[in-house]
Length: 312
Ligand SMILES: [Zn+2]
Image (cartoon, rainbow, N blue to C red):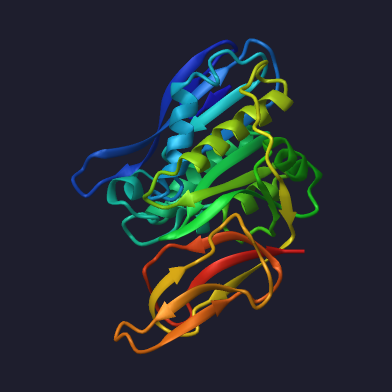
C-alpha cells in the first residue's frame, strides 16, 4: 500500500504525516494518519475525525480507539485512523479553517486552492482511492446537541449495511450534501457513514461510548477484529425525514424536553422569555416524532433552529 511517499507493508503499523500547507509563521502543517495493516488481506476502512476542528467528541472517539489499541491486532484488512483532519480548526476552537471555509463543503478540492480545498484534496487524492468504507465522526455544530446517530445515504445497500452494523441508537437516512466527503465518496461507490454525537467543544460520555462501540461493531462485522465489547441493549430507531422547530421570537431559551425523547404535535417542549421579564412564548413540537437534536444555547434569535425532529 502506497500513501504519498510512504509504503506500508502487510503486517506493518505506521504513523505518517500528510502535508497540507504552511502557517503564516512558515511552520509546516501536516495531518497525522495512523495506518494499521493486517498480514491478511481484507477491506480498508477509514476512521476519520476532526474535519470540523471544534467537534471534540469526534476527535476523542478516534483518539480513544487508537489509545485503546482497537486496531493493533487486525485479523484482516487495513485501518487508516485520522483523529484530527482540520488541525487549524482544532487549534482555534473552530469548525472552519482560518480563511473561514468549511473542509466538508470543499470536496473534492484543489491542490492549489484555499486551505479547506487543500485538506479536501489530500483526502480525495491520497486516501479515498485506497478506501473501501469509512466512518466520519462529527458532533452537532455550535451549541446544538445531537443524540448519537448515524447518517447514511439513501439507495445505497452498502451504506445501509454499514449503518446497521454500527448499531447507534438512531439511524437517519439522509441525502448527501454536495461537496462533502460523503458525497465525493458516494460518487466513487465508497460507503461513508457520518456519525453525529454530542455538541461542539463539549465532551459527552454517551456520545463517545456509542462511537467507540460503533467502530468495534463495524470492524467485527467486517471480520477485521475478532473481539469487541458487549453492546448495551438499547432501543434503536430509524428515520427518513427530519425537520427543525425554530424560534418564533428572540430571547432567553429554556428547553423542557431534550434529545432522545418522543414528542407529540403541539406539545410544549421549550419556552422563550423576553429578557425584560414581561413576556414568554411556548415552543411547540410541529409534528409527532422524536427529538434527534436540540439547541443548548441560552439566547436565541428569531428563526434559530431549536429542536431537530425525526419522523416517518
Ligand atoms: Zn461536523
